[in-house]
Image 1 (cartoon, rainbow, N blue to C red):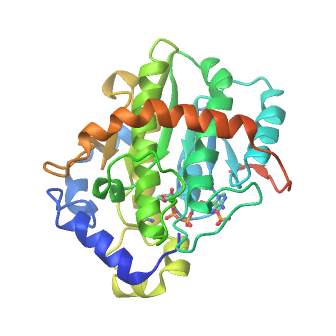
Image 2 (image 1 turned 30 degrees about the vertical axis):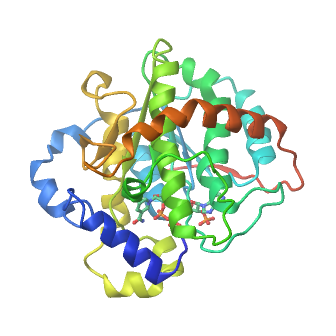
Length: 310
Ligand SMILES: NC(=O)c1ccc[n+]([C@@H]2O[C@H](COP(=O)([O-])OP(=O)(O)OC[C@H]3O[C@@H](n4cnc5c(N)ncnc54)[C@H](OP(=O)(O)O)[C@@H]3O)[C@@H](O)[C@H]2O)c1
């Protein structure tokens, strides 16, 4: 994740000042209510894909799933849509059921960077890559019905913005922090839509907020922020906790389309934030993403998938 300290501080403060005071730091407080037996579940033979799994929350998630017996496929680059497609095509030829897809890959790039396919970088990874991979994995997820899951790692940053159709931040003054928050809002709204669209397919869709965690991405891209809050931020493992929890719980305990934080369903909107009605735009956004996803062309081929061994 990358971004400027000043805008990030405003962003963090906006969330901190919200009606969810525990959102940022108090995993230790919330964890008093955690049930250890929730995590004592073995998932031998289940196939899980984790994107952005080479560091931080993604790595901790991959490790947590693999240590419980899952076959974990760590996917390391989703910024190129053509590469996502070529991965999906190769992976689909394995014809194995996918029980859990964890859409974790994400970044907060403060500069307006454009990918080789012509997309704004935050959008390419956080939204379009995530969207395309999820769509292309649906047939394999259906093979794991009635208990397949898609877990998308969003962020509490999404509370600060409504859903907007301007997916690539067309305004003059590009702000990576705002763009990141918008992307994370799209993930939450898409999860809601997918849950509705595929409710009869035996696939559950969940989005979640990991809490602010001191991950390699945060430490590298936000050194001052990371340093000033050192010891107060969560560990990558604490950030991954609810992702793993969502993968392990009986599906009857979970609400498809829900947004989760610290092993519990949380509101997707803050009172008086005026974001609620904005989710009506998701149908049109879904159409746009479908079009972009279908018509993306490849100029590079850097896709990697690694099978995790424990
Ligand atoms: N840490 C937090 O406080 C926090 C809070 C809220 C939400 N989140 C979300 O949690 C998820 C994991 O973040 P993290 O904090 O663990 O950060 P991280 O350590 O930077 O991990 C992010 C992962 O996404 C991958 N990624 C970054 N840019 C990519 C690109 N262009 N194409 C494909 N993959 C890319 C990274 O791969 P490379 O290492 O190869 O770049 C890495 O594996 C993200 O979705 C983030 O938005 C984190």
